[in-house]
Length: 309
Length: 292
Image 1 (tube, chains in turn cyan, green):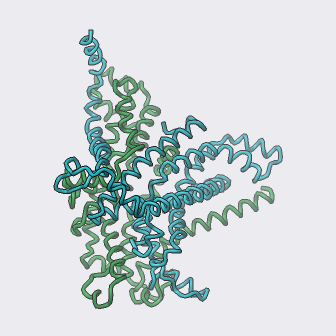
Image 2: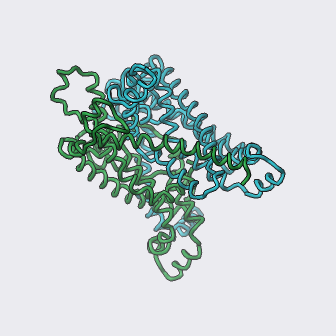
């Protein structure tokens, strides 16, 4: 009985054999690149030694976490969550506004042009964005210190060692890089709204603002909710490049620029701290996973077709 | 057009052009800076209206140990090879996953999908790539970790195969006795060109822009890609900012102009291909956007 079942299954699979062969390299790659490191997270509970490797290193229970929790955890997590909260709110507001304005432009060519230009910052690597920021902020040769501040009679500012400015600088750079990308996504939704809604509203004498408030925003709501919840799902992750490269890894800015990702990397290159780093890495992966599942669950409740799964 | 809508259009254009300028201005400062004479930068800083122009920054880049041409070749090869390999792997997972009756399809789909929800993060990956695969200071370090197969692109392509390739075409291939590989290459892929171009561009830009693999795994300067070279120049500038003058002697610091010249060369390939390909890139963002 069992063997006939097996034979049946094999018979069903046989015509698909070429497909299984096709999937082999990709599957092996994912197992190596994605799945082995998941198992490797146990390193957070070990005293890692390069000579012994992850599996043979000694178990030390929660020691790595104790160090991480006692020293920097609150600051690092607060920075990560704080920046992400500000980023999510501001980028949603700005991108939705830009998308609505693009949609209301009459000339088709200009719609295209603005979308194309606004996406450019998103296509540039963050290392190069760090150079662009440097051209403005450098102490001796920066554009701000040489050409702008003197106009207002302000003394030059040593940007790369004054941490109080950095929450604003990083938020600005993030928005500069990201707004076009999000605006394009929102614009695609707006462009898909049935135009007869607007025509009917015009007949009823609705103004520009009424149309935005009563048609565009309600139609955008599912997209806004989905994108926001997806960002919340990634709230324990930060753009490593933004927080590491743009402040040029400056030590005096660490209070304002340290996030979980920069913390993990700095621990890794400073070999004695790899235990702390692996604990932070573990916390990030697990909390991140829980949050993705939760936010997806919420999306499903609100609008099922927008859920990730 | 009514008067209010004329005013509204004018307001939109004012806002849009302001954003336009904010987007473009930093690039302009960088480009002008790269063509400014070094003495002029030292005297008046990076400026949109320098008093003295010069090509010295580019000459400097070609002549010193910041070997930009070599890095360029490395970046170009990594991008070309990585993109080709990545497309091959993405197709070879996406196409079988689009075959609805394949036994075990859900298991494989879950295997791909789960990588979007959970990952091991930097530390375990770093340990694995360096100690099991000895990837440090190899060109493979630019290609294999993280970038080769992204679940997101696999799912995007699978959706395209299920929705845009008529089943009848595949069936006709089978009737004529073509093998599954022949069907894929001769019938399916030619029809899937738009999605191949879109994913290829997104992956290619990803490879060209990637600096993290270089930062983690490559520290031998003869193997620097453009992004890693830029990164190392940035580090040199930062490190010397804290040094005294006597320590500074003997440190080969890129000139102020050369930094901007190097950054400009880093974006050049993207700036050149973008106008011709923006349709595909924007398309890619809008198809995948919401679920990305």
